[in-house]
Image 1 (spheres, one colour):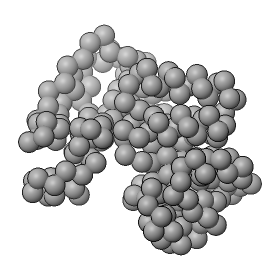
Image 2: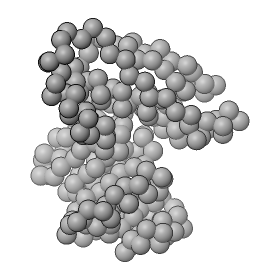
Image 3: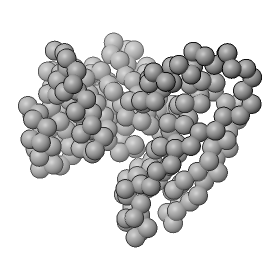
Length: 216
């Protein structure tokens, strides 16, 4: 049985735990949150065996095989690095981390410790995406591709009141490009490879964050 521990307590973790319950051979073992009360409540609501609010104690648990990380974007690298050093397999929410250098380091640590790390990106693993990819050569020379992922954020009303949550905080690596535009990037790069050049045109909020944008 594969034992899973989760980091984070947002809606995406709720959905991940629901998915875990539908798969044989894997189970939720423990949850981690920086707040003890929140960790306890989250564990109780999802029937987890244990809960932690000390990250080192959580990652040192020998019963945990896989760590699912869904913390604020700016914490991905630091938490994933610690988990890899404890020789845990990692499923890391998108965006993987903030820089290419950080990503390279995480892959190197994973190789060194004989564990796996992958990004929890969904669209490139769907059957329709694989169908497009397999038939790409049959549809001729492609001149232009346009992808649009637009959604009114559940946190945007708070942002308009000058309440800055993680999703709209530059210090936490928030913003539209690092959130839903990430799916567009994976879609295009996965089909056509890395671009020769890129330009990002963004609408900026009062604190400099990109509330929306177009990447060419």
